[in-house]
Length: 444
Ligand code: GLU
Image (tube, protein in one colour):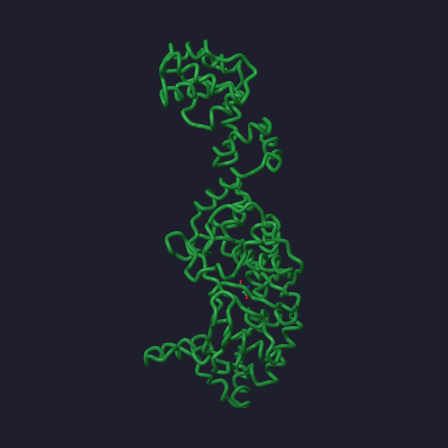
C-alpha cells in the first residue's frame, strides 16, 4: 500500500496542503503502507529550490516523515515514453489552435447556450493541414482523447462516484513549448511508483475522470483507489487561498505553535470527531478513518489553532515540557508546572506565574486590618497541601468573612492578581516567608 503527497514547489506549504499531507500520512501509517513525497516541479518557471526546501523543513517540523522522495523534473524520460505510447494508440493528438482561436470557439458555444467544450476540430485535420501549420511556425499542444463514457469509482470518502467524460474538453497534456502539464506526469508516476491510494481534495474529482481514462490507456485497467475530501474554506466561507500568507506552516511555526496543535486541528477539521487537541501522533494514527470525513466544506478558523495549542499546553507532562521551562529560565519543578499549566494560553504565560511564586511582586491590599489579621494567623512553614485550608479556616473564624470576600483579598495580597491557579497549590510554592512579607504589604 502506498500513498503520495505531491506538492508543487511554487509557494509555501499552507494549512490546505497540510490536510492533504496528513490524511495521506495517517492512512499510510495506520495501514503499514508507505508515504511517498513527490515534488511536482514540472512548472519550471514557478518552481524553486527554496520552496522545495521549505516543504522538507515544514514536513519535518510537523513530524510527517516520508519513506521515498521523487522529483518530476528528474523523470521526463518516462513521461516521454508514456506520451509516445498514447500517440501510437491514437489517444494523444496535436492541436494547432491558438489561445485566441480557442477563446473565440468558447464564446461562440456559450452564446449558443452550448457548454464550452473543445470541438475536436484538430482530430479531423489532415497531415497536410498540420504540415501547413508547422510551416507557419505554429507548434502544437497535445490533447488526450477522452472516451466520452461515464467513469465510475468507489470513492474512499464520497462513496459511489461517476464523471461523464462527454461533458469535458479533451484535456491538454502537453503545452506548445513541450512542457508537461500536471495531468499526465501524475498518472505516469502513480503507475510507475506503485501508488495504490490517491487521497486529495475534491477540486480533483473531475481530473479523476480524465486521469482514470489515462490510467486505462497506459495500464489496461489498473488504477489506484481514490478518495476526495472537501476543501478547507476560511471561517467566513471564502476560499482559503486569499489568506494563505498568514496560514503558512512557516508562520505558524514562527508564532510558536506546537506542531501537534496544527496536526490535531487538521486531523479533526471537517470530520465527525470534535476539533480538539489529540495527545500524540500515535493517537492521531489510531483515530484516523475516512468514513469520519464529512461532505461539507471544512471551515478553518485560525482561532482554533490557538485554542488547541493552549489545550495541548495544558495537557503537557512536566517531563515533556521541562526543557522549554529551562530554556525560559523558569523551571521551578514539577509541582509548579502542574499547578500553573491549566492557566496558560501561551507558553510564555508561565513567566507570570513563576514571578508570582518567586517574587518580587507587589501585593494588592485593600483592607489593611484584614491583611494584618491574616498575617497573624499564617501557619508556620514549611507549607504543605493542607496549609491553605487550615489558614483560610482560621481567617474565616476570626474575621467572619466567607466566600469571595474571604478568598479574594488573600489572593490579591499573596499574588498581586485577582485570578490564577488554585491557591492551595500556589500557597505551598510561595512559601511562608514570601507570604508573610506580602501580607505585611511589602514587596516580596
Ligand atoms: N501537484 C498537484 C497539486 O498540488 C497534485 C495533485 C494530486 O494529488 O494529484 O494539485
